[in-house]
Image (cartoon, rainbow over all chains, first blue to last red; front, side, top):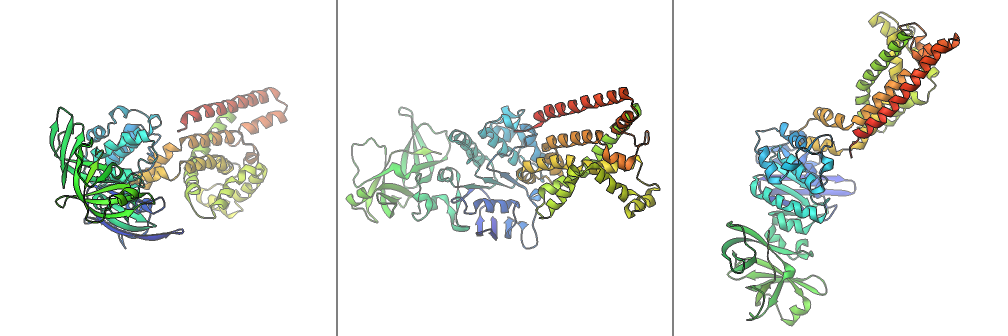
Length: 352
Length: 219
């Protein structure tokens, strides 16, 4: 368990947060620019000092009496810009933290190099790398210092789309292979849905909501459901693979879904369904090109604007929640209300 | 003539080394401190740049002489007075060249910003470790510029030396003073040799510094 409280005035801005989080998984600190998420991360690292405390399991990094300086805290920090040391090669950058590690190394050099795909870059100079490569090296450098937690401050925001897409799969791999918690600051809904397990939602220096991603993503009063890329994420179990059509059947709480493409044989996977890819029908049509049709009932709804409506569905047998975005015209036309049974037609499912 | 050359090189080398030791912490403090009065200190450091060397030399002569308490303190500790000695020249040169070392260093410390220091701290480097393994290597172009400027400036020093060092062969008679002497005594040939040598030396210093500095920069 990690517990932190930071409180203080920064210019015109007042930060006052107190949270607990599990000591594993990716915890996203999410909010618009200027909501205080980076400040929280800097306080956790000891780069900035505000009133409060910070405990990791039984270790105290900050309380009324103690304030460990940053270099005495076993953490990894990935900044927005990779900030590699220009006077050192990639390899020397990677070794910088490893050499100074406070505890017995928990990861091997080869393992991290392999995980991040940077073996070909070792002899190069930082100024000869692309933005994505640089950020991967920065992540590797942080991990090789054997941290007990990894802090990432919008690590993708300085990158273009291509470089972002290049890095995300590596972050997934870290998530699966590392046992340390990752605090991930972002203002990008896509990154939250793609990566986070837990979410700390921030607004004006205060915590608005904290919880599991699945619960908060379907909360219509929170910003995730209101965003363009609103989606629901499910844990799914692979059931079978249809060779003829190259489709994989997976089971989620309350239904089964076909995924296009073969899923590498793993028991549990994560899938994501965009709210705008879900349409609603009162009756199950016989002839439809849509493969995935799930019985569900309306659980809650909230208009998004004059034309769109957000609807939270509950899948059958008290299954998972599914977020749908339809037009208000359709909502009125179908005469939907809370408790209406219907069929959710899912146009596309993405494996994440 | 050779005596003067050797003495000059010795003086410039020692001055540069002493200034590296004093200049690094001073420039670091000027670059990082948030105290309002640091610019006053910075102005004092820059003063030798605009002050006529004779004025600086005059005050140094007074301060270092055994009649002044600083000069007297030195006599009490080391047993000799500073004016008209090589040590006196080193002290004068260090003060005279201070801005040439401190300003380039301060610039390169400031231009690297806070970030490399924070990164080093998150990688378990203590402040001293960070200074040695990150700050100094990253400021190498400033170190080079500062050292070369200090060395060259000390080689060309005249006014301050004449005021506090006089003209004692192999003790305080450096190149610039020697040239002055040759001209005074109408020995044009020797004056030509030394002056021409200085001209070439100065030119080479600047060319080499520019070339090396370009390679030293990080983008």
